[in-house]
Image 1 (cartoon, helix red, strand yellow):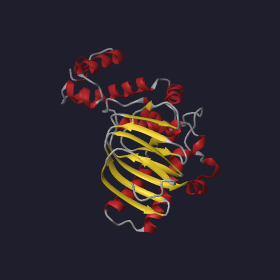
Image 2 (cartoon, one colour):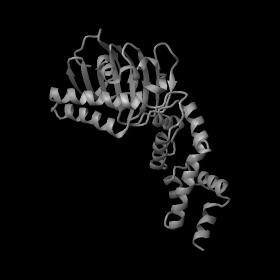
Image 3 (tube, one colour):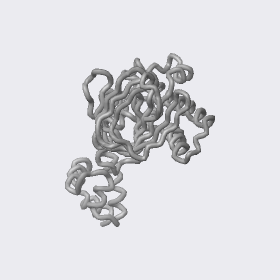
Image 4 (tube, helix red, strand yellow):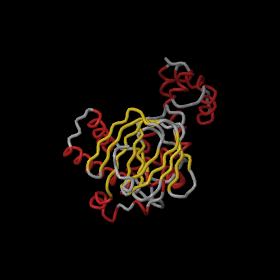
Length: 285
């Protein structure tokens, strides 16, 4: 941790590797690899964290609440509000952390962005491309020793604007799943059909909703539960591979996110009434 008054922000965490930092007034930007272990932090600045590699194990709690185990895929953005204690227990991961003053967020978000009024699910989300690009620009600047103070200040302000938009204008608990967010979720699913552990919590993060509310709204909007929708899309993708006739069934199974050829065959038969081999013969008689 750089030389900062612990009364402004205090943090204890596992050993850090490849640590680089930039400090400007009350803004700090860090890049590092954190080893597995526990982190405890609290301070008068907002802390934004983006893990650049997947977490296989991740649990957290705000204040004195209970620990929650969650999926934290690469490029998840987490927001720790100022004056709120956060504890994390996770495995190793690469990180970008940015500490910023509350006044900056108040000037940008006004009354529409109040992190103290958001539930825990509303304080994290899969990073959108614009936010990620700004955060990576901050990281690259300090890694290349080209962290011009004026540039860093402008990038910090741009990041705050992105975070307010990402976390402050999305649907809150109880809101409907908008057509725009549904499109984002479907595009996300289509891009990751080969990921076998694609989770509801991950998709809920894309939609800025709690997993329970997202599942209910997704089914209400599409007519099917998220899990069923994913299976149907995997089967449709598998049909394209089967029609091509060039790949082994095992390869198709893994390419479309199934855990095994047996699982693939079982689901395919249940949804189409044919086995994959029968479907392939039907399109290549």
